[in-house]
Amino acid sequence: MSDIFVHLLTPAPLLIVLVGAFAIATAQAGFATFGRALAALAPLMRARPDDDRDAARALLFRVEAIADLHGLARTDRLRARHPFVAQALNTLANAADVEHFSLWIGQAIADRRTRHQRVIAFWNACADAAPAMGMAGTIVGLIGMFAAMRDPAAIGPAMALALLTTLHGMILANMIAGPIANRLAGLSERELAWQAALADRMIAIARKENAPIRRPGMREVA
Image (cartoon, rainbow, N blue to C red):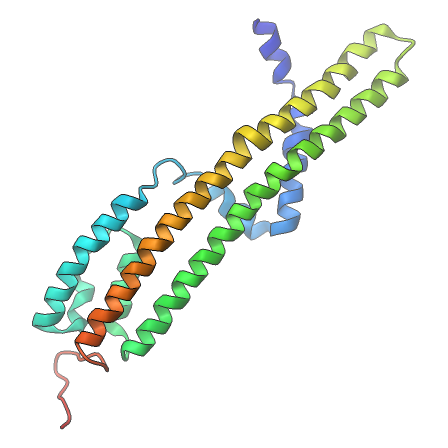
């Protein structure tokens, strides 16, 4: 049994599938997206969009209370663990008026959606390319088999290459890249949903406090 696992980890078939699939996905998405796709693996399992949503909702009550008592310029003193929420609070406190803040947060969410979609597309491209690279390795192995028909000792390695590249292509597509893309898509949908709701609520709070946003020391002109 142990010999089987040793053969499964033979470098050549693995490299054909991995390098080929990643090269095709990178050619489609670009090197910048390749870096983001690898970076997305870090929060893949520890991301908690529902917890981030609940924390943002709780923070909004504090934002509204501070805005009512001291004005929106003081909202940047609140601390948020999520980078998007922290940036939104800082921008809300320093925006010239509600419309500027509304435009900024709408564009920020749109940019995040675009980045998410590119990373998801990268992993989907890997899932699509992996079986094709497996088939390419199979063809190379078969060619090696037919070329070595007179040498029985050389047939085995060529046959192993043919079979293992197909296997690795199936594993990469259906057990690695595909599930990663699907999980990232689900996380993205949930994250962008609560961020859009947060944006609507912050805009409503800003409108309630009147535009342009007042800062300490500013006088209202009659």
